Image (cartoon, rainbow, N blue to C red; front, side, top):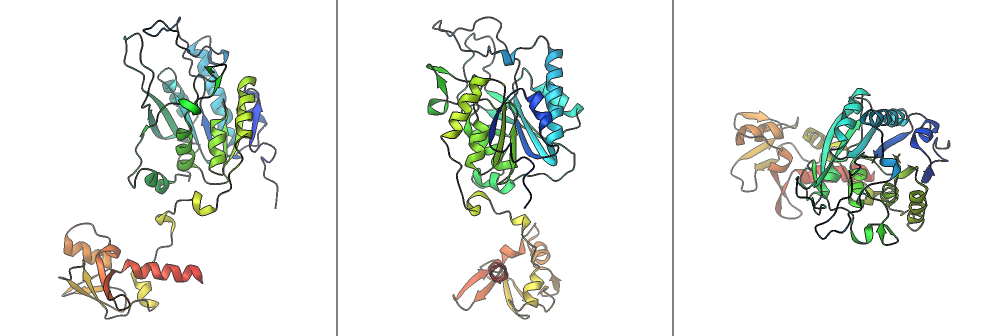
Length: 366
């Protein structure tokens, strides 16, 4: 087995400027990029709470730019470098606030990324607007984009639906900001001013990567992306310019050993990926015999007869299990869930989908 092209990079926190490090990575080698770049949101002067205590803002050097032009040039440079290392099937997430996300989105499109979604992270516990002169900033925006328009990409729709109580996951995510034990501190003060909640990265990685994929974070900070990659059995590469954050990220990750999960724990089954089984195949294979009587619904007011070719006949109407149910009911219909047969072994009516399930079990065991 050949060595992974990123073998020396996997599960490492690399200290350095991403604009210098990214060009040294192999081209088209990364499955997903999550980027939490500088927001360029310097406070103009001190911000005080109503009790006159000082709000700890973002005043680090990495978030300072001379002008919007300088910020745009920086954004173009790192997005271009990321594009080179993304696989053709890869996608990129970038998060920002109103200070920068619109500029980032425009540059993404200029660089031929294709935007798949914008997601609003709604903070259930945002910091108040202490001056009372504007709305409280209670959300940030994430852009999800693919490298090549139309290319196949990973989206674990069923996993997202399951996380959301069997409902489609929406593009507004209600997740609290980092607080309590999750918020890293140093000397009693928060370590990183824009530390992202683990739940946010958990959802992103669950949605758009698979076990064993490589996730790159060019602004690694304190290592939250790496933490969630480990938790979900993905590989990570973290690049961080600030040596203090690098130290704490490595410490944080060293205390959390890679979890080993069986594959079924990490993968949500996707019915769409399963091989299609026509009803006629079950007739052909002898799982249901021609002449069998099926009832539409479990009350048994309408009966159909199974034909040798897998069609059903009700009076003068003839069609597939789906078409006939649709014509009789006058609405969209999934025949597998609507036609019932009499099961002699249980002495009860069962959906014909049970026969399909039995066939699947038999071929998977063989």
